[in-house]
Image 1 (cartoon, one colour):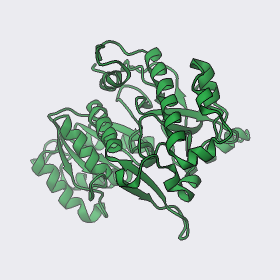
Image 2 (tube, one colour):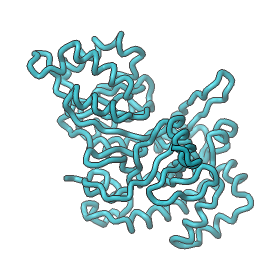
Image 3 (cartoon, rainbow, N blue to C red):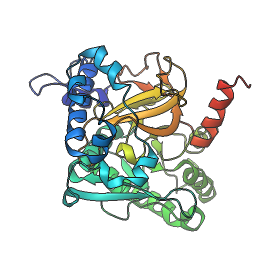
Length: 367
């Protein structure tokens, strides 16, 4: 099969003179990652008030003179950044003037008095996301597909708009419906679009897709013998935890392939996507460096053990994040993927509350 994400990653990892279709290696990715981490560290310490404060007692320039494993060992000792820092010191994260910011995403927090998180993007930062969507969606669909996007798409720079642009860049047709307010009330309109446009792929929240599946069955569009039958080839579930029973239900209802995506706004909306050939999600290693750590002390977890996801942006200009704690939990999948990709895979990322509870039980030895 064509390893689209590997080829795309190779174009960013390699010099333009080298063939992107030649087999990508872990050695190339690791060398690229170290160089980008060094560049990002030097960049933030020169341009961000927050990182200047955070690293005031650390000789970052000397750290960046270290090579290979010695640098990585030192890097993992850097103090993490947190959502609390983002809420309290959002503009101190910035490495560019606010006039260069093209999009600010406000993320409300729980509680009526909790300060929101605000994440800032330059136009260049947003183009990185479009580029990832362009190539990541090639695992799921092709230029012949008509993709219905049931994700926020009401303003420029929203995830639905960026995804739509990425799909058009690869030659597919994108229908930016937006995030439904009520699937039950909007189901008839959505189903009409599916029939009229001959939709072959859908991107949606799992909870919305479950409700749409029930309405689709009632409308007869999942019945092969019905004149209203709509043949979906793929569904991409994102933005929520995806239970296995949801995947099974959608596979049975629509008789198509189900894919999953993990990402968060701070990551630039896109982080990792399943390929359809194996468990877990392939990581966007050209733009993000992920660690799996013990949430109690920040130490790296053993290969294959569950821990908290901590990430560092490798290519962001507006608001880079260095060792940002997500509160999400997963593990590295160590066995090779059947698709043949060399990109690292993380296991299914659970909801923050559910997985945290499971991990506390494991740590305490409670079955």
